[in-house]
Length: 85
Image 1 (cartoon, rainbow, N blue to C red):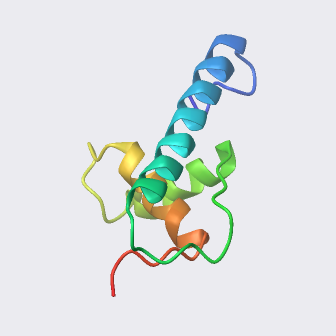
Image 2: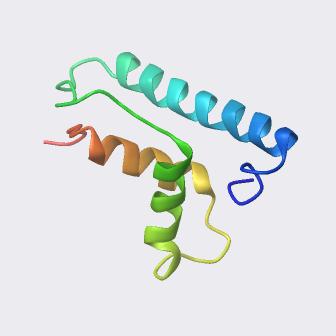
């Protein structure tokens, strides 16, 4: 989807829905996890950030690693979220 989104309206719409759902879910999970300190910055996610998150782990991750956990982990790191003490 990332590669096709620039030229294919259906891919762009699908990617937008996926990224929106991923970002909203991550935000909801942080809100639901009572007792954790807030993030230093706002959560952000766009197609380039998703691409970078996936590319950054491609060399070390298994070839079939799901993209969503990689993207959310990157999102939380960029926002400065502290998930453990």
